[in-house]
Length: 269
Image (cartoon, rainbow, N blue to C red; front, side, top):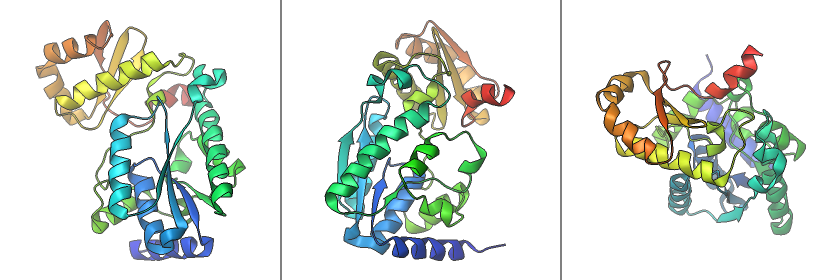
């Protein structure tokens, strides 16, 4: 089996060969490790760019700012306006492609204006096994995924992040808030705000890895299986908190948290 250190050396080599990079930086596990390595290998020839919109959790933005400051790397924040795109708001299965198409177009403009040759984003070797239409937008923009090219899996990245002392090493995955809506459910700023408030309420109860899936008047809670008993023990308080955000009913998913559960309808189809 290939050693983790060999993959890390391969990543270093890929970044050296690139010579520079505008890094799409969300503050999540993958993009944070990619930025850390880019800062090490490329130094001043690496630029972190974070896209801000209604779909991006405020807590993630705060974490991204903190880490970029810690790494002492240039950090640019840009606005994206995916909700103004009717195709995105209609929430089709290729919603992520529509969003990332705008993102990478804006990243490409930043790179051109500042004299960078490459765009880089934090896809990993596990992403090939899930529905990731956003990667098509990256390919069309000529962006590279150095972690994927180096063969690094999510588990690899977490372990290397832990060794590096990055605070993101054990951070739960935090995709954009649009991922909480079943395909075909129109996405609005008000609905995004409602879901964000509901998830914040659950985190205030001590739950960490979670999703609040939006089903009209119903909030479907996905929690880690080991947390289901605690949720049931405090069901009245939790239900009251989520109803206060605008939901009429609160349902607990007995299968528990699983990444990309709303893609299950695509696999069934």
